[in-house]
Length: 362
View 1 (tube, rainbow, N blue to C red):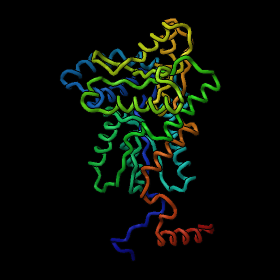
View 2 (view 1 turned 30 degrees about the horizontal axis):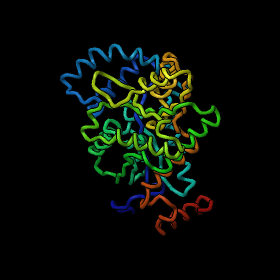
View 3 (view 1 turned 135 degrees about the vertical axis):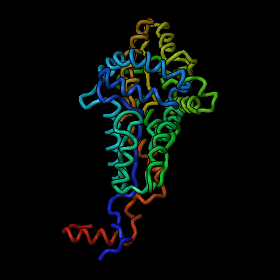
View 4 (view 1 turned 120 degrees about the vertical axis):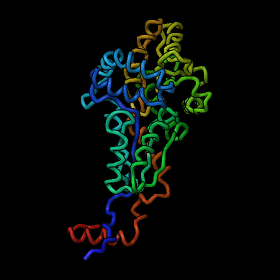
């Protein structure tokens, strides 16, 4: 007869990895985009304006006008499987599980979106239900920003508050200067040049943030520039051959600069030269890269008198990109019992007994 205190021993991986990214609407429709924007733009980490001032603007103007326009943009980049960011993040999570497994790590990898589906809470529930006693929260954003990484951790913290038993947590806040990440970026640029030839200028376009975030102590601006400097050095380029810019401005506040639009306009005015554009702040292609840069940016450059804008895709689930994600994950998994050798002798004996019972080798 089993004692009340007898519990089933854990047979599967006890370490989970949750790969987190920003999010996308469920469908490229005004209704779905409205739901997504309502959640995204209601986050005080994203819009740091008092609710009494912001909510009338959000619900009275933005959510009435913007969804239809944004839905058309999403439709222009929508993949057969869904939103590009979700599709690629799912692929990254699947490959991360496989790559880590090949390197001897027994982990359970899932993915989540900060806004939209699948939610962070639901995926943490799934990891815990699968037996994860330790969870690595892998923020896919290479550079730390309060509006991204801190917002993810707000959701993780809210989930923790509802747990009677909390798993042990680790967090990947950034990897903007990780050698494997810089090497992967350099490889993607070099491969692009081998296929397409080299443009006159390499523009590195990062997502924009209000300038006040820098003055409040957010390291995002500095980390973007460090990524740019390390990549420039890895490519053997002179500083004047690379331009750093910030895209996706919103509202009337002063934003980090220069803007990607103004840089492309200035380069276009220099003549019909081709320009290469890379977005190192995005781990996966999404609306902001595929539509705003590859489409709208190309129009901006051409209308200003420039040549072709050759967009260099994000690392996505490329072998080089996955190597970088695996290297970052392994660095943060150190010391946790992820490898076969980390299993106790008792656990190994139990596994062998189960294998014999099912007629297989352990």
